[in-house]
Length: 387
Image 1 (cartoon, rainbow, N blue to C red):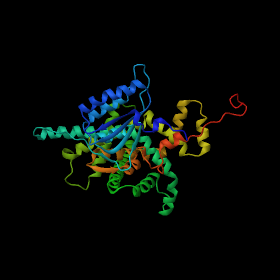
Image 2: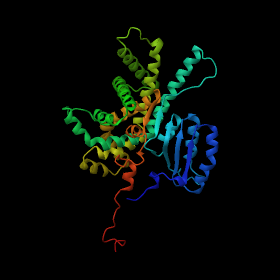
Image 3: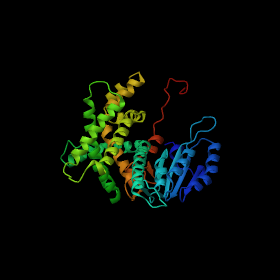
Image 4: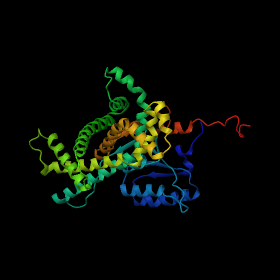
């Protein structure tokens, strides 16, 4: 085992985010961050004990931490560590670290966006604020998903060997990988985290049906269409979906909550489509595809000389496994960012993919173990080095 500084907290190269995250805290930490960055490009540890604060100030702090230097050297790796509490914006800061760890007794809290108001709120203003918060929550959820998707996928691939046992135990050989994953994780969570998992499962079921409806409707387009015309078809499919979903509710109508749901579903579908076509999703397929197919297929695929063709092949092979897991994961991120206060333990955060490692819990699989225990390639006997 060779210790890797990119995955280990280091008090000698660290800052401490203590108290409310605001403009004053960013100002006070800026000289420390710049000094560490000027000293070297080695990882910086960010210890966190914070009730949260301003999301904008948190992003300013994160952007400063991840800034390149004047010689265009890459940013320092950022290791975030929840020491006691990481709430609200501090929870986002923790999750957005390149490698995120938590001490065993720490607590983490995510919740939906909030807008403090110092004046009375009119009906018109409340509508604007509600729309702003929905869009903010949508953006926050997708940002969270993009930042931590590798952690959740690692939970999936390293738990998958348990799934056949779950299918046997329930006498249900057709149980999907997603349902097996949910059943495997649930007993390991606190009651609060189990509630989040249940809400995410219900949200995913709705998303799954909606996405399938839209894709089916869009596939019926024969002639070439402009983007606006394609989106019109998608919107019509979502309208039909909303009507079907609420056919037994005589009080439901588009004039009230219907338009809100229509907007939310359309934005969600477009984000879903964009990510599945993104380089980051293809990278996931390449990274984890080998864990999902046979060694023979892995060898054949890796022998494809053209890089684009090889990536495309891995995406085709891995997507049937990863796409449902990824879609559920997005529903989980939306649940975290749109819900009310739900305090999570360090172990909750680990199993939900929010952090990489719990300090002192080496029985839980984490990326540091893989990176520090990778076998060293030995030189061949006939090489000069061996001689």
